[in-house]
Length: 309
Image (cartoon, rainbow, N blue to C red):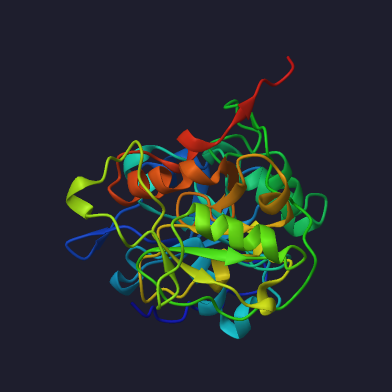
């Protein structure tokens, strides 16, 4: 569904956007009390630096996701570094607010502890902390400096600044080829996934009523286009059109064609946009199925390594 453009923040302000509504009423959860702010007219002044948050709410932004934000920011975020999103995970899940990058790799997101929001925003705006630092130091839940353990396959923080076309609007997963050095390996991957049909889909043969969520084939639209060569996880969220509910994007990169199990990089689009995990190709279908029926969350598929005390 199309979303309206976000308002332009005044100099020194950061938008605090509500993306969760009930019967048209904006829901903020306990966040206003948790972030340590004082109201000053229409803005919230945060402790730990004095950053000014401007709350904005309109029912048309219900279910707005981080990847959708850059296209809605005036001039696509020119001059603005970050937007803070209050989504269903904050309101009902007790998660931290989602910071959405508008500068380095627009659309990717990282959650931060509510009590540290002022401190972190002040550091971002002051240049002593970069969004790449947030990505590099997030835990399996997508929380900056959280205690959930570091992903064994961390999402790359620093990505080349490149322009990619918009991905196809699709209500299923997208399988995107990002490496074009091994045609034989790519074809072998498609065969292992059951082959493509005449419309460019894999995994469309099985009867949905007979699918086991523990051993589900990947149903995905294949995107085989050199325009996406070198596409990284952090680039993905802003390229997914909001018209359809795409559950996840799967990247087939160089290691997919060369390593055992043909590992695929799976990119989150909702809880923490741009967060990624690496799974053998045979396991990605079950992940997509469980996410689509809300049986599991993305973080449950993130391989974690212990953090040294």
